[in-house]
Length: 210
Image 1 (tube, rainbow, N blue to C red):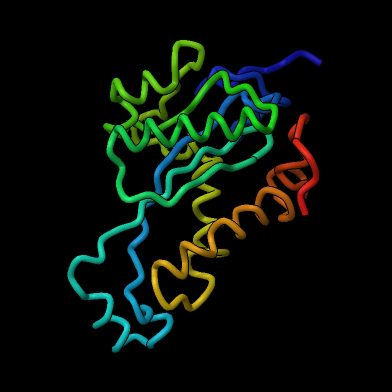
Image 2: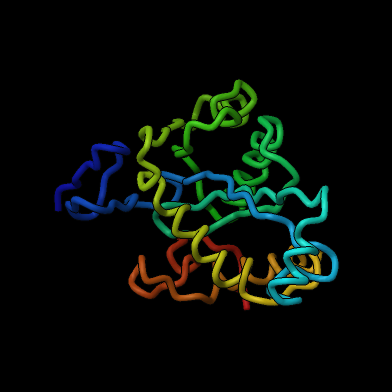
């Protein structure tokens, strides 16, 4: 069967579609993005304390945001993610170096990365982290759906982790993230890949995860 090419990404896709595409193999495209989440105050927010008290607790100064940096493989949906303190160019570059190591450990050689046009991704630091062997694709202006795989990941983590429990603090929520991420990669069926789990679509997964 001849491969088709998605015009927005330049990637081979399994079948023509006006609305979605899929990289033909792991590493052919990795979506990278940052999601901002308001931090939970000590004692809990409104989900824990109710609207009136929780709103007052949320109003404390200095809470700020947590920044979730993601790298999601287009073909398998395998995800690497960290909760970090900012979205500076150095932070984004260092995150990618760790994400690349994660994919290498799973037998995935990344050949292209897609990001939005945020300043951290337009920086020399991020370009240096990618290196000359990784093609940097950017989303079209005002077309966030071009990076739809990672946007879908953001919606999933919001409902299944970030706002799924009545956490008593930001530390409490962050501590629950690695277990949820493992569940997402190794146990959670993904409708976008026919009910498979992301790890099952990686050819050289090291060991067995339970």
